[in-house]
Every structure is written in C-alpha cells, then in structure tokens.
Image (tube, rainbow, N blue to C red; front, side, top):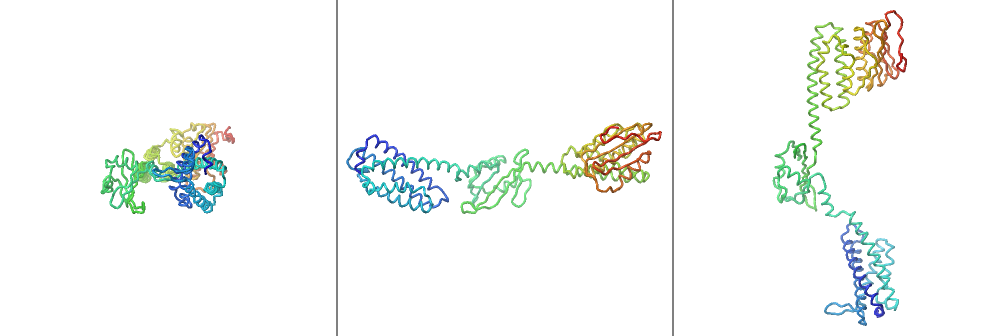
Length: 485
C-alpha cells in the first residue's frame, strides 16, 4: 500500500473528501435499510451496508494518511496509531456477505461491487502494485455513483411508504372523528376531527382520563340504540357516535368514532315532512270520499257515478302517479293536496268547461305529464262540456294506464254549422288489445249524447277521435296526420 504515498496531494485530498461524504451517505442508507419492514434478508442487508460504510471510512483514512506522507498508511486513533492494512480485511467479510446477499435475493447487479470489495483486501492490493492507485480511484467513483442512486431511491421510497407518522397524519385528515382508549380509559389517540366535535359539544378535549365520556355523550343524544348515538353538534349538523372494541398494538382497546350524518338527518326531516303531508292528503281524501258517498245518495245514480269517475278518478290517478314516481317535493305535494281538497267543489260545479282545458293541463303537469292543446273548445256549451269531459278522461287514462308523458289535444269547429272535431293522442305504451273498463264506455256515451261518433286507434300513437257532423248532415273535413285540415 506504500504506492498510495506517491499520489498527488490534490488527488488524495479529493479522494479523502469524497470518501468521507460517501461514508456519511452510506451510513444514512444503512439506517434506511434497517427501518424497512417486510424486506427480504433484511438483517443480512443491514450488516452488508454497514460494512460498506466501514470500507469507505477506511478509504478516507488511507487517503488522509498518505497525504501526510508518513511512509506508512496508518489510522490515527487518539492516543494510538493503527495500521490500516490489517483493517482492510473487513472488505473480505463485506465481499462474503455481499455474495451471500446476492444469492439470497438473486441480485446479479451486485457482482461488480462484490468483486470490487474483494480487490480492496490487502492481498489484492499488494498484488496490484502501482495499480492500487487506479483501484482506489475506481472504488471511490463506483461508490459515489452507487450512493447517489441509493439515496435517490430511499427518498422516493420514503414518500410512498407507510410509516407511523404518515398514519397519524392520515387519521388527522379524516373528516370523521376517531379516538382510542385503553382498558383504564386513558386516551391513546384522538384526531383533530374528534377534538372539534367534542369542542362543539362543550366537552374537554385534553382528556388524559376519559371516564364518563360516553355517558356525557348519551346526555346529548337524540337517538340511542346498541352503542350508537346520534348527537346534534350544531345548527344543521349531526354526528353518529359508535363505540366498539379493537386490538391496537396487541392490546384490547375501546374505540369511539364520530361520523358526519348531517345530510341523512336533513333527509329524515324532509321525509317526515312529506309523510305528514301524505297523511294530511289521506285525511283530505277520506273526507272527500265520505262527502262523495253522501252526495251520491242524493243525486241520480248514473249521473253521479259518471261525475265521480271523471273528477275523483283523475285526482286519484294524479296522486297515484305522483307516488309511483317517488317525488318528495313538498311544494308539488301541497298542490296535489289542493286538488284533492277541491274535489267536492268540482263535483258541485255544473259548468266545468267554462275555464277551458287549462285546469286539466295544470293538474297533470304536477306529475310530469305535458298536455298540449291546439285549438279552442267549441262555442256550443253542450258540445264544449262533452269535449272537456272526454279530454279529462282520455288524459287520465293516458297517465294511469299508458304511463304517458306527453298528450296532444286537437280541437276544430264551433259545434254548430261547422260541426266539430276532437283528437287526443299520447306517447305512452299502446295496448295490444283494448280492454274497455269504465272510462272508454263513458267517453263513448258522452260522444253519442251530443250526436258525435267515437273511434279508437290503438296503433302508435294511441289516439281517440270524436267527430261531430255539421248541422247540414255532411261529414266534416278531418285533419290529416300532420295536423292540417
């Protein structure tokens, strides 16, 4: 190793400084390897990386001693001087451990550095002669590149790995409150969200002893069932507290979680409001039906039955369709309740066509059925009343049986000298076979009562046509498919 003393001082200074920094970097890498979990042959890898750090320290000491030109390469340790040459046999141990680690982990890339460590043993250095100068330069260069690459990988791995600190940070970032207590009710951990919840309730957050905490939460609870509490923590906010037992660090602990259920609580309030409105609607409906039964006993049976079918049937169809759609809009429900409350008024109204077809369009719009009217009701009051009844029954059937969303009503003529024409089309499902219940016969009787013909086309779209001939007896001109006469 005496050839090292012949190297230039500047080169030795560079090697000394670089190897010193590399030894520090290698020590950091060895600590990173020691902290890894689940690594294959971790203990063997830690020992190997530690010996590489020792190797770099010896290179630094050798360069420093050669720079002082003492004639021998010595390691000065106060108060003694140790020859470095015997200490370099540590490289042989490092090479052996490196070879074993390469075999255990199947790392073919380690062959080069294992060979380099083996060449740094005293026997190999003596055999190299002046080539030992080149060997030192190659050794320092290789481990400089290796240390830089390994530190970069360690930094990248630390960002992606899960540590205790990262777990604590993740728990603090949770919107749900969580805390753990041991068997003596000593708080082991409490995240920020749980502190905010307890602060909002006016409870202590620096708890070392959490005895009686659950009982205090029970005093605030709106609902309580099997270890679950719903507590209002502010205006419009609510938390679900859950208590259970978990194993933390091999110890049985008690866990309390505070889950935000504000949206669910608001939804429950809305559902309760809708239920109350539905109950009120049912009461109105029962009262209306009782009134209908009383009026039916006083009126003629046939006329009363027809009028009840037209009025109550359409209202019930609207309510039934509303309930089927699952709409929970309180404003729409209030309007439907208004329709139900006016059933008796509509039954007592002898001239329902006076307001035109707008009430029908508005009522069915509440359940999403669009009724478009082209034309005006005939001027003749009897014909207009009959046409209004037929339109009401046709739209009711379209919404109730065909699940239609769009109904087109076309009107033509004055009901006198020009005659009159009515067609009602819907975009609902057309039945394969028309089964006449009570609605279609009632419409047919109404049409025949004014001297008009009544026809059904069950093809798509399902269409009802009523034709009233002019007073002269000639058939009126019917609209074509495009809607033009």
